[in-house]
Length: 61
Image 1 (cartoon, rainbow, N blue to C red):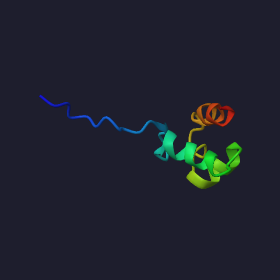
Image 2: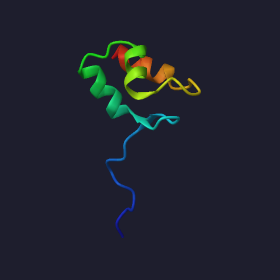
Image 3: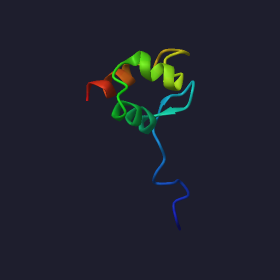
Image 4: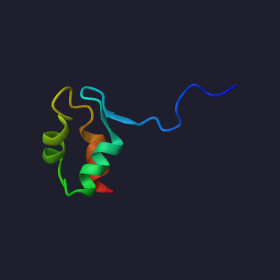
């Protein structure tokens, strides 16, 4: 029987806005080099703030 979950499911970084890891990585590739730029583009970090550390870790890579 086939697995009903898609293998390409995106990792949600910001649950408040639904911002995915893939979206954040795309923004970083296009030059977003700080938390404020990513927040402005996605709305991430404007709700509960729990995604801040995850986004900062992606920026450090």
